[in-house]
Amino acid sequence: MKIDALYRLYLQHPEICTDTRKIKSGCLFFALQGLNFNGNTFAPEALKLGAAYVIVSDPLLQGPRYIYVNDTLEALQSLAQYHRTQLTVPLIAITGSNGKTTTKELITCALREKYIVHATKGNLNNHIGVPLTLLTSPIETEIIVCEMGANHIGEIKKLCEIAKPTHGIITNIGNAHLEGFGSIEGVQKAKGELFEYLNVHDGYAFLNTDDVRLRELGSLLRRKTTFGFDDSASPDISFEYHITGEKNGFILKDRKHDITLVSEMFGFYNASNVLAAYTIAEHFDVPGNKIVASLSSFIPGANRSETISFRGCRIVKDAYNANPSSMELALRAFSLQYPNGWVILGDMKELGEESDQAHHRIINIIKELGFPYVVLVGKAFRAAIQHQKSQFPDLIISDSIDEIKSGWDWEKCKGQTLLLKASRSMMMEKLLED
Image (cartoon, rainbow, N blue to C red; front, top):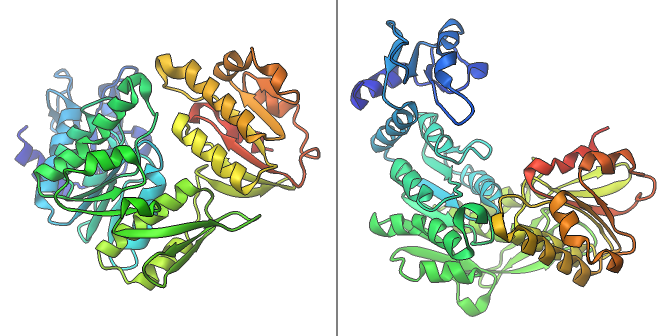
């Protein structure tokens, strides 16, 4: 089926589904395929559950409500790309090594003070999630905020070709997904594909001048606003950062104007995310008082720098994901705000050959910061600590959070502040389950 014919069908049935567990009556079901699944096998069920049509790549599936294409993922992406050409609204693309989803939520929160905003749900930011973000955009949308993730060079370029961003931001360049990118230089090249796209297509960028690698990437940008805390880099928008003492949060003060923003979020890295959102909202002419009010009241969730009370303890849950850069940032921020806090860390994944060295570095940072109580979870940390364990007399090391939980004594840590940080697959939040 040609793309214009598929698009006419989409306009009649604008609900898109790729999972039979989430079928809505009258939707279009795309039978996507992966290494461990074949959506074609679920196409008949999708029709029984109420799908109007199913888009399949198996020629043996035939009938009036079956639409055959060579590649269902390519068809989904082409449909989203075609739909984007019909939209005239700005699209802000967000990528980076850390903080993409939190920054996306902050930007969306601030922009909604003035606009009807459609944003990526959760972290559906890949080759499937970006097309779905575009295709689920309501007709009344005034700005789209689209998160883009990648673990290989070329992926951001492809996502930009589909989403056609008019504006963009790279949160930072760090040691993430090294197994796919190969090196920090590979990360920089991959994330920089967003700025390259914007430069070629007369787009507008928001540049974090605190990140030296981003400054390098952004040096050739023709249209940009710079922001940061490092005044020596002369950003267009510059704030001072102050922690709020013994309680969670920070205060931002505009260096040039009488603007103060108080946030309950944890850590300098989140202050950078807030400043990014402030910069973008100001660019889109959201009133300053509304920007400050929306960002001051923002509360993170879903294990992203989320602070909760549990069994008499304050818990900083930063366990949605982790890489060497985000782990170091979290530890240093936690040490600054809670120098006597306890840390419970799990393995960092997708680091390839860099894994052992990265875990060794984190252990050295723990030693440098002098936390009184340390728990390490996972085989990578166990391997990295084996020759240094004598330097941590009170260290607890285990292969799984389930083992830690079975012997955990909440009475022992009552009144303490704990940091939970690890890659998603370590499921550190299990410690907090009753």
